[in-house]
Length: 487
Image 1 (cartoon, rainbow, N blue to C red):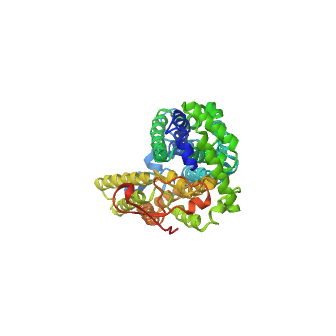
Image 2: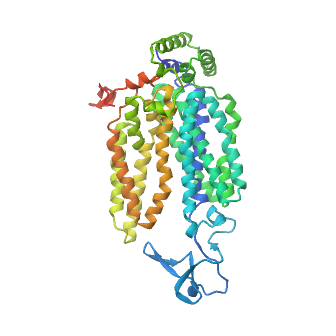
Image 3: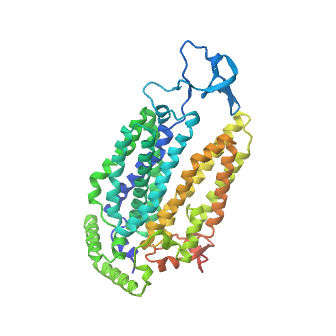
């Protein structure tokens, strides 16, 4: 008898689980909006030095070559009629934007010597995401999923209001940093709550379904951003959507798994009875009692390390979890076999794209197709990342482990804007070689991780250590052979 048996007996899935999935999965749509927001509110904006209307532009604005094309220099003017000397724009910039459209670029002149600030705002957002992955992972394991979720759900709308009225760049970056913190917290906690309430056979669907909604969020936000021209309203829309979640947050129950593992048996029974009643099925009292007894017995014989509050440091105290975590820092992608294929193909495609010459339009079109293909395989590997990580770590430290994985993933988000600058100053091929090489490395490391397909969720550190390294032979689940763990 395990907690999985209890959750299976509460609906497979029932109406409650479906409604909970719809409620929590909406978080992923709104979160994707805020991840993508800077691509629109900070979009590259054509500009040139402000000059008098009667001025002959060709006589005072120099030409420059970018990517093999000649265009007006957007950052300099000739010094009078001296065409051998250039000076920075003395009167600011004029932006090539339709009437009523604005970006943070045009509002705070984030161009020329200040162009790095646009990339820095993205970096600082992901610094916030990174911080949130660690803080909220630990908090929700210690104080419960429900309490932390309720705290975090109110924050995006408040921060969105601040961003709507913000008047300077520094304040914008600060508020976006805190927005990244709370959104990552919501994302981690909502995912964990879903994994812990659904029966074993539906965990994969639960995870992949969230990725579909993430993609839908990106598509819908792209359309809405096209229709809404002012960046203030785009940002407000991305955070105001959370108001729909606030209305129903008081009906959100605590995770039964978290309550049981923390010896809050009366609360766990109350939540389980409410779920059974909502699903109109008998409450499995006998199963619940056996689950409680087994948890009590296991805690009596468990090491003291299994009955305390956990932090990210505890991941590295266990040799098994430490080795898995070190690999996940580099990988943090889907389950083993598909992950290897996704990374191998995606990395190869990106390296080929980087090696192709960019001399003509036909080759450039091919490069674009290959890059999109590489992005497709990267998305495929990311599709099962959350479910895989949650299956490797036990309930007592699941959110901490998930947060640690997200932490390392967001290091890439922090570095990405600066890597783009590296491509500008060197070659775009450098970016493709770098991303492709990391994908190949991730694919190789993924083969060292244990398989978790169709396994029950581990509850304690000892349960997690028992997950065996799996070898695929034959077809389907019958081909899974349990071997001694190598990590």
